[in-house]
Image 1 (cartoon, rainbow, N blue to C red):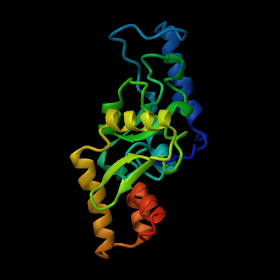
Image 2: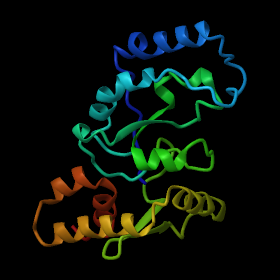
Image 3: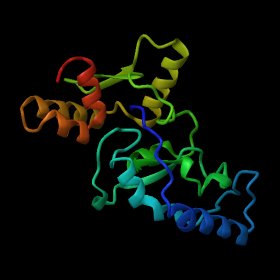
Length: 199
C-alpha cells in the first residue's frame, strides 16, 4: 500500500450519486444516525461514479496499488467507513476508495484497515525479488502493528500477491517494459524499487 492523494469530487457527483442516494434514503425512511438494520441493502448509486473514480485515481486499486483496466469490470467502490455503520456516508465522495473487487470483498465492514489517504509512503516495504511486504521496522511499534494488521486483513502478503509483485519487478528487470510503465502498472513496486535504488 502507498499513499493515495485525495482527488476532487467530480462535477456530476452531487446529481448522479449524492442527491439520488439521499432521496432514496429519505423515501425508504433509513435513519442516518444509527447503523443499518440487518439485511438492509442500499441502492448502489455509487456505481454512477466508477468511470470518474477510475480516471481520477489512475485506475489503481487503493489497497494493492496496481493498475486494473476499467473494461474488465474488476473495479469497485469501497466505502472506507462501512455503509452498514454510517448510512449518511454511503453516498459521499470523501468516503470512497477505488479498489479491485477482491480487496473490497476482503475489507468488508472491518475497521482495522489503514486508510490509503492517510498512509505514509514507506510504511509498507517490499522485497522485490520475493514480493514479500512488511511494515517499515523504523516505524513506532503501534504503527507497525497497524500496518501488519492491514496486511493480514486484506491478505496483501498472500502467495498470489507476492507472486504478482515479484513478477512485475522481474519483468521490468528483464527489460519487458520501462520504469515509466512499471510506475503505471504497479506503483507500489515502482516506489519501493526506486527507494531502494533498483531502477
